[in-house]
Image (cartoon, rainbow, N blue to C red; front, side):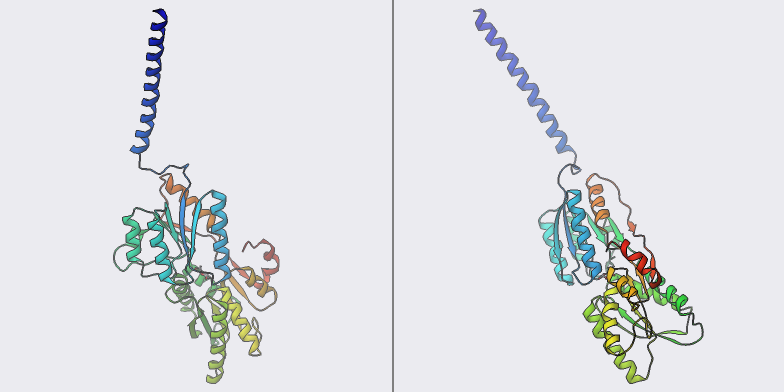
Length: 340
Ligand code: GYE
């Protein structure tokens, strides 16, 4: 009889314990279901659509993003668009379908993103712009991304022109400039041109006599420079200066200038933008006169932003990159410090 009672008591106690455990369990579940905020400890999935591999800058940018994702323990879905907007749109749509936590992309051109960004917004997936800005055909672009991190391209164009005017010290004689533009319709091509021209407005003796796109690549930079040299010769014009929207096009143009029997950096003064190692080497060789820095090392701040988003932190709409100007005189000293 006593034994029987002990068994009953034990059974009741067990049931009670089970009840407590179950109650606790369901409590936690309820709480988790209650908060919509993604958990900070879950592995974040980031879809990134890259422009392509058109320049040394872009390669360094890709490496920075891949390395920083690994370091931060973020799962990166990386897609290379080979400089085609349609490929970027496809990649972003596939990220939406896969329900990634965050989408980031470096838009190859400024316009044409309305539909896909509306789709991302409808799917409630936050979008981060890296490196390049966008324009919407209707509505406010800022409503479609959480933050835009990257350089001030207008400022870079201004820096290139200010350096040039200082260096040339020619206030009265005419100075003939040729310009190699970046990808047509891209934010850096539009803004660098704008900044450069803004400064030259106050120096009317500087004239941009030819301006064409070299699509940010060495091969195109060389090809277009060859055409510039030929037509200038046919028209009896002297080219004094080359302004290239990136270092790679300047490096391609240097080859064209040498093949035409001229001395780059001397017969034609050259200023470009990015500050990649190739530019420092060209400066040390005396073939390039100045590079304006544009840092591609956006990986760490992109990962930080993705993490902040997941923990519900508010991000500033604009995260600006800090950068400088490097004339040829400091190239040899600076080259060992360059990280890209
Ligand atoms: O200057 C160029 C690259 O968007 C800042 O793209 C970037 C530019 C960079 O291809 O080299």
